[in-house]
Amino acid sequence: MTAHISRKIEDPATYTPGFSYRHGALVCESVSLDAIASRSGTPAYVYSRAAFTSAYRTLDRAFGSLPHRIYYAVKANSNLAVLKAFARLGSSFDIVSGGELFRLRKVGVRGERIIFSGVGKTREEIREALRAHILLFNVESEAELDTLASEASKDGRAAPASIRVNPDIRAGGHPHIATGHHRHKFGIDWTEARRLYLRHKNSLWIGWRGISSHIGSQITSAEPFRRTASRLARYFVELRREGIALRSLDLGGGIGIRYTNERPLAFAEYAKALPRALTVLAKNGTEIFIEPGRSLVGNAGVLLTRVLYTKRSRGKTFVIVDAAMNDLIRPALYGATHCITPVKRRSNAGTERVDVVGPVCESGDFFVHDWPMAQVEAGDLLAIWSAGAYGFVESSNYNSRTRAAEVLVEGAKFRVVKRRETHADLIRGERT
Ligand code: LLP
Figure 1 (tube, rainbow, N blue to C red):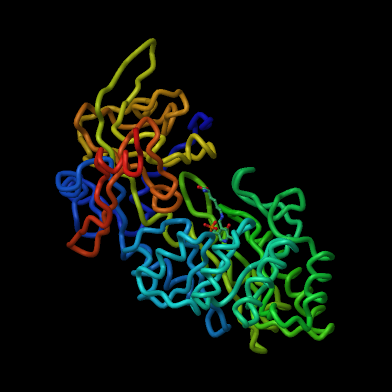
Figure 2 (cartoon, helix red, strand yellow):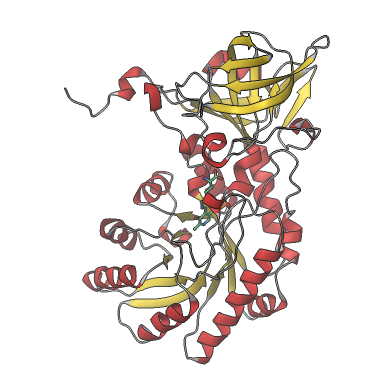
């Protein structure tokens, strides 16, 4: 459950690029959220292209002249318009399913800009990815490696591969999103990984290209990244001594963002924290790969929702909005707190502590508890902040609710980049 918010919460408009107040009303770039709501209806996800563009460029620049490639983690926000924008920026992509591969192909991304991660790739997904000539498979088990080799042999070409090593490091904002400890299902421990690299050293069907890791998500300090990078650099050198020359070293994603009072790592601090052992490898031509998702798009989006009712009961105030846990499940699933503010500032409104909740029939359907907010009434618009990552992509049709619209803002223009679902969408594919 969300902790009682006792510390003062700063208005996210003060630190979120792409969003600000103009004449007392919230705008995304130069477009009023009110205008967007009138056109697209609510709930709607609204993304600022300038915000994620600037995040991408800042991260890219943080590496300076070190050879590096950014693989945007498609799972964080896979809207086609967002993917297309990243492709135009020069980004490469990290996928975890055949569906994500399909999306990238829809926007014309070539295989050489794609790596495939994930602990349970199916044989069909592997086959499709081989056919698409993707750059690299991040392999997570011996059984998967065998499947990959067998599919590659049918294709008559070695599959480009790297092993996702589990570096046994605890990190991550919530138990569900920590992945780098030996008790987690992810990756392969070093002793085993080393054995597999050697087993396939002269294989016809596996072509070793790199070594990879991903230790978790919403990590706000440099230390776990530094330790992971130095372990990987050590393994890299050890493999080279065994005659296995790799080209890339992948540090995964995981850089945290500010939701309320966190003090996340600036990209420059992240890059500065990389150990010398790694920068030496990079200076000698090894490419550093990273797979960021949240840190590129998280702060670049809000979920726009309208107040349906307010309800006062036994000293509690409930603000019932038209978005629900099916639209944004992070509070229910990870105990995440997303700031919520009214879209219009009313000068005479007092502040009260409220629970902002959705219409779904579960007590788990809440956004915040005891949240200090200016008084609102039915019809008011609210912004649920930092919803650009793991927001829409985790939405569902629970309670037979149609999924929200998605809107992309660019300067003074905006486009609905996914229309709101209709009732017909709800029953597509069903039969009586
Ligand atoms: N690479 C791999 C292999 C991953 O599994 C992930 C995220 C990423 C990269 C991107 O990580 P990021 O930079 O976004 O932290 N739904 C959860 C987060 C799940 C993260 C899963 N893996 C949430 O809403 O907090």
